Image 1 (tube, rainbow, N blue to C red):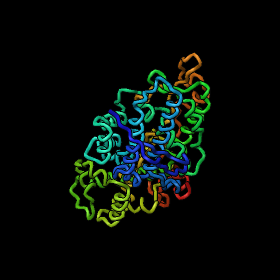
Image 2 (image 1 turned 135 degrees about the vertical axis):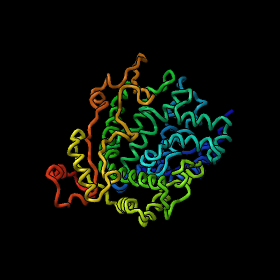
Image 3 (image 1 turned 90 degrees about the horizontal axis):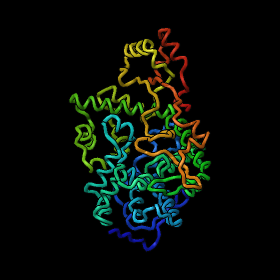
Image 4 (image 1 turned 120 degrees about the vertical axis):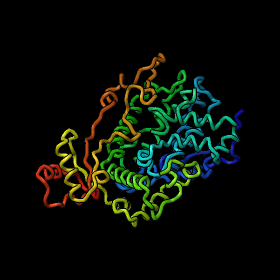
Length: 435
């Protein structure tokens, strides 16, 4: 039996994106004050993007509060409208899941996940279900609450409409991070009329749909998503920093597996290397720990690890030039040449195409189990939005961008480049110092 105890006095967070974030339920307030949720203050929302856009220092904590607030607004609108397709008994459960959806993000999430075959959603569920303060708060609501919250986050909960509010092609998560990331990076790409979008979302036969009259507001949202995808999330300078991080973690992992004795290796990192990481270790794994470790590693005996860490901490990022991945002869020549010059291509060179981050442009079909966006006309008939919108149809599934070759900037100054390599590097993109 759910027992949502209201706070005696409503709590309010002042927020630069939503102006105010309101908390009326004691369990939500208690969750915010758990040590696991407070840890999100120490995890940046945009990973290495602060090295490209200096204002992008915002945290997973502020984003998670924003997702909660948007979800609260949507549910309030459903309840005011008296829509029979909205299961009112799911309100608190949905709010808890929205607040906790990013609980398991690690430091510089995408790089560390890629190196160590981790996934933040799995760790979110482990923290929700394990011996944690978050778990105790949820069990105080109802013994079944931790399992239900984990089910929503891992997309196995049996009510799709509840999952869709937190994770879908038009969800509270995307709406907040577009607005928040746009605000803190200082660009206008992420702006759209949030209030209008929220007013036209409807529950319908177990799904979320949009009133046809709200199509233009959703077009604006999808165009914002498209622009942020290419201009912010896949910015080549940010990709350079991500690749540098990947090289650091990759080098450390190889050294550990070879029995190298680190002068400094924190316990959680040691157990991460051994694949023995516990929930308590994961709680301690934040960006403060990792960056302190990088600072120590600049003095490690291994010259590659020391150099890579110094590059990251001092923002001496890899340069990049466009490259044709089919030009294998030139690429092989370049890698052999840089090895002769003393640079290990395994850690100092990479061809990258922006495809491995969890940000995406809109696609009309199913996307990782997520339904496309449907418009509902006056007869309550549903139409996938790209069948009605020329704008959405034109951007759906477009893949722009290009392959880039990343490498140390010192190679640009080498005087004895073979002609093919000189031609390749003459097309150098702007320096990371001037993004």
